[in-house]
Image 1 (cartoon, rainbow, N blue to C red):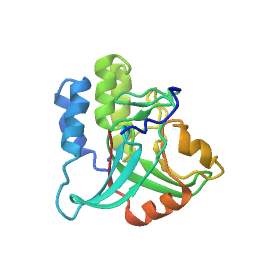
Image 2 (image 1 turned 45 degrees about the vertical axis):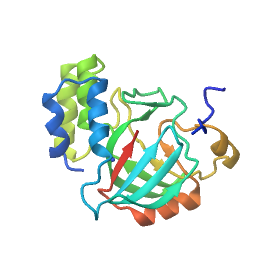
Image 3 (image 1 turned 90 degrees about the vertical axis):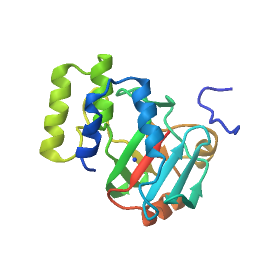
Length: 203
Protein backbone atom coordinates (compact mmCIF):
# COMPACT_ATOMS: atom_id res chain seq x y z
CA UNK A 1 0.00 0.00 0.00
CA UNK A 2 1.28 3.47 -0.88
CA UNK A 3 2.68 5.07 2.28
CA UNK A 4 0.45 8.08 1.66
CA UNK A 5 -2.71 6.00 1.53
CA UNK A 6 -5.05 6.29 4.46
CA UNK A 7 -5.59 3.18 6.55
CA UNK A 8 -9.24 2.24 6.07
CA UNK A 9 -9.15 -1.15 7.76
CA UNK A 10 -10.55 -0.82 10.61
CA UNK A 11 -6.63 18.85 22.76
CA UNK A 12 -5.10 27.00 26.92
CA UNK A 13 -3.97 27.24 30.34
CA UNK A 14 -0.24 26.81 30.76
CA UNK A 15 -0.54 25.59 34.32
CA UNK A 16 -1.94 22.15 33.57
CA UNK A 17 0.74 20.99 31.09
CA UNK A 18 3.44 22.27 33.42
CA UNK A 19 2.54 19.52 35.85
CA UNK A 20 4.24 17.13 33.44
CA UNK A 21 7.60 18.83 33.63
CA UNK A 22 8.87 16.72 36.48
CA UNK A 23 8.43 13.43 34.62
CA UNK A 24 10.94 11.92 32.20
CA UNK A 25 10.09 12.54 28.56
CA UNK A 26 9.73 9.42 26.41
CA UNK A 27 7.11 7.57 24.41
CA UNK A 28 5.63 6.51 27.74
CA UNK A 29 5.03 10.17 28.59
CA UNK A 30 2.87 10.62 25.51
CA UNK A 31 1.12 7.30 26.21
CA UNK A 32 0.32 8.58 29.69
CA UNK A 33 -0.95 11.90 28.33
CA UNK A 34 -3.19 10.19 25.80
CA UNK A 35 -4.58 7.64 28.25
CA UNK A 36 -5.73 10.47 30.52
CA UNK A 37 -6.83 12.71 27.66
CA UNK A 38 -9.56 10.42 26.34
CA UNK A 39 -11.42 10.54 29.65
CA UNK A 40 -13.90 13.45 29.63
CA UNK A 41 -13.44 16.01 32.40
CA UNK A 42 -17.16 15.93 33.19
CA UNK A 43 -20.50 15.10 31.56
CA UNK A 44 -20.82 18.63 30.18
CA UNK A 45 -17.41 18.88 28.56
CA UNK A 46 -17.49 19.16 24.79
CA UNK A 47 -14.28 17.79 23.30
CA UNK A 48 -12.84 16.40 20.08
CA UNK A 49 -11.09 13.08 19.40
CA UNK A 50 -9.10 12.57 16.20
CA UNK A 51 -8.25 8.91 15.56
CA UNK A 52 -5.35 8.26 13.19
CA UNK A 53 -6.12 4.53 12.93
CA UNK A 54 -9.73 5.19 11.88
CA UNK A 55 -9.18 8.41 9.91
CA UNK A 56 -12.05 9.92 11.90
CA UNK A 57 -12.88 12.97 13.97
CA UNK A 58 -15.51 12.73 16.69
CA UNK A 59 -17.12 15.42 18.82
CA UNK A 60 -18.27 14.34 22.27
CA UNK A 61 -20.28 15.83 25.09
CA UNK A 62 -18.83 13.95 28.03
CA UNK A 63 -19.03 10.32 26.84
CA UNK A 64 -21.90 10.99 24.43
CA UNK A 65 -21.03 11.09 20.74
CA UNK A 66 -22.45 14.19 19.05
CA UNK A 67 -20.90 14.08 15.59
CA UNK A 68 -18.52 11.89 13.60
CA UNK A 69 -16.65 13.12 10.52
CA UNK A 70 -14.81 10.78 8.16
CA UNK A 71 -12.60 10.34 6.38
CA UNK A 72 -10.20 12.95 7.71
CA UNK A 73 -6.72 13.53 6.31
CA UNK A 74 -3.60 13.92 8.44
CA UNK A 75 -0.02 14.81 7.60
CA UNK A 76 1.88 13.16 4.78
CA UNK A 77 4.50 12.17 7.33
CA UNK A 78 2.00 10.24 9.45
CA UNK A 79 1.03 10.91 13.07
CA UNK A 80 3.90 11.06 15.56
CA UNK A 81 4.43 11.86 19.22
CA UNK A 82 7.45 13.94 18.30
CA UNK A 83 7.14 16.14 15.25
CA UNK A 84 9.82 18.35 13.72
CA UNK A 85 9.50 21.24 11.31
CA UNK A 86 9.42 20.08 7.70
CA UNK A 87 8.54 16.48 8.56
CA UNK A 88 4.89 16.92 7.56
CA UNK A 89 3.76 14.79 10.49
CA UNK A 90 0.65 15.39 12.57
CA UNK A 91 1.53 15.65 16.28
CA UNK A 92 -0.11 13.29 18.73
CA UNK A 93 -1.24 14.68 22.05
CA UNK A 94 -3.77 16.78 23.91
CA UNK A 95 -4.34 20.31 22.68
CA UNK A 96 -6.64 23.29 23.08
CA UNK A 97 -8.28 25.35 20.37
CA UNK A 98 -6.74 28.80 20.56
CA UNK A 99 -7.87 30.61 17.41
CA UNK A 100 -10.23 30.60 14.44
CA UNK A 101 -9.32 31.98 11.02
CA UNK A 102 -12.41 32.23 8.86
CA UNK A 103 -10.48 33.76 5.97
CA UNK A 104 -8.03 30.89 5.57
CA UNK A 105 -7.10 29.47 2.17
CA UNK A 106 -8.43 26.24 3.67
CA UNK A 107 -11.86 27.84 4.19
CA UNK A 108 -11.76 27.80 8.02
CA UNK A 109 -8.66 27.14 10.11
CA UNK A 110 -9.11 26.07 13.75
CA UNK A 111 -5.75 26.59 15.43
CA UNK A 112 -4.34 24.34 18.16
CA UNK A 113 -1.80 25.23 20.85
CA UNK A 114 0.99 23.07 19.42
CA UNK A 115 3.77 22.64 20.49
CA UNK A 116 2.53 22.08 24.03
CA UNK A 117 4.78 22.05 27.12
CA UNK A 118 4.72 18.26 26.91
CA UNK A 119 6.17 18.39 23.40
CA UNK A 120 8.79 20.86 24.56
CA UNK A 121 9.78 18.56 27.43
CA UNK A 122 10.04 15.57 25.09
CA UNK A 123 12.18 17.64 22.70
CA UNK A 124 14.54 18.58 25.53
CA UNK A 125 14.90 15.01 26.77
CA UNK A 126 15.52 13.65 23.26
CA UNK A 127 18.07 16.33 22.38
CA UNK A 128 15.90 18.04 19.76
CA UNK A 129 15.75 21.11 22.02
CA UNK A 130 18.81 22.49 23.78
CA UNK A 131 18.33 23.81 27.29
CA UNK A 132 18.36 27.31 25.79
CA UNK A 133 15.64 26.33 23.28
CA UNK A 134 13.59 24.94 26.14
CA UNK A 135 14.01 28.05 28.27
CA UNK A 136 13.19 30.28 25.29
CA UNK A 137 10.04 28.24 24.62
CA UNK A 138 8.67 28.90 28.12
CA UNK A 139 9.79 32.51 28.11
CA UNK A 140 7.82 33.06 24.92
CA UNK A 141 4.81 31.11 26.21
CA UNK A 142 4.66 33.14 29.42
CA UNK A 143 4.94 36.45 27.55
CA UNK A 144 2.39 35.71 24.84
CA UNK A 145 0.07 33.09 26.32
CA UNK A 146 0.60 30.68 23.45
CA UNK A 147 3.58 28.62 22.22
CA UNK A 148 6.14 29.83 19.68
CA UNK A 149 5.44 28.65 16.16
CA UNK A 150 8.90 28.95 14.65
CA UNK A 151 11.12 26.52 16.59
CA UNK A 152 12.51 23.22 15.31
CA UNK A 153 9.21 21.62 16.40
CA UNK A 154 7.31 23.67 13.85
CA UNK A 155 3.86 25.12 14.42
CA UNK A 156 0.68 26.36 12.77
CA UNK A 157 -1.09 23.06 13.44
CA UNK A 158 -4.86 22.96 13.38
CA UNK A 159 -8.02 21.51 11.86
CA UNK A 160 -9.09 22.96 8.54
CA UNK A 161 -11.22 22.48 5.47
CA UNK A 162 -10.22 21.85 1.87
CA UNK A 163 -10.60 25.31 0.41
CA UNK A 164 -9.29 24.91 -3.13
CA UNK A 165 -7.94 21.42 -2.36
CA UNK A 166 -8.92 18.35 -4.35
CA UNK A 167 -11.76 16.37 -2.71
CA UNK A 168 -10.65 13.15 -4.43
CA UNK A 169 -7.13 13.41 -3.01
CA UNK A 170 -8.70 14.10 0.39
CA UNK A 171 -10.78 10.93 0.17
CA UNK A 172 -7.79 8.77 -0.76
CA UNK A 173 -4.66 10.16 0.90
CA UNK A 174 -3.16 11.85 3.92
CA UNK A 175 -2.10 15.06 2.21
CA UNK A 176 -1.56 17.86 4.74
CA UNK A 177 1.68 19.31 6.11
CA UNK A 178 0.68 18.17 9.60
CA UNK A 179 -2.81 19.50 10.16
CA UNK A 180 -6.09 17.59 10.34
CA UNK A 181 -8.24 18.20 7.27
CA UNK A 182 -11.97 17.73 6.82
CA UNK A 183 -14.31 18.93 4.09
CA UNK A 184 -15.53 22.52 4.02
CA UNK A 185 -19.07 21.64 5.19
CA UNK A 186 -17.57 19.54 7.98
CA UNK A 187 -15.25 22.30 9.22
CA UNK A 188 -18.20 24.71 9.17
CA UNK A 189 -20.20 22.29 11.30
CA UNK A 190 -17.25 21.64 13.60
CA UNK A 191 -16.61 25.34 14.14
CA UNK A 192 -20.24 25.73 15.21
CA UNK A 193 -19.86 23.01 17.85
CA UNK A 194 -16.58 24.05 19.51
CA UNK A 195 -14.96 27.23 20.81
CA UNK A 196 -11.73 28.71 22.08
CA UNK A 197 -10.44 26.41 24.81
CA UNK A 198 -12.10 23.24 23.49
CA UNK A 199 -9.91 20.22 24.15
CA UNK A 200 -8.71 18.28 21.10
CA UNK A 201 -7.04 14.87 21.42
CA UNK A 202 -5.10 13.39 18.49
CA UNK A 203 -4.07 9.75 18.92
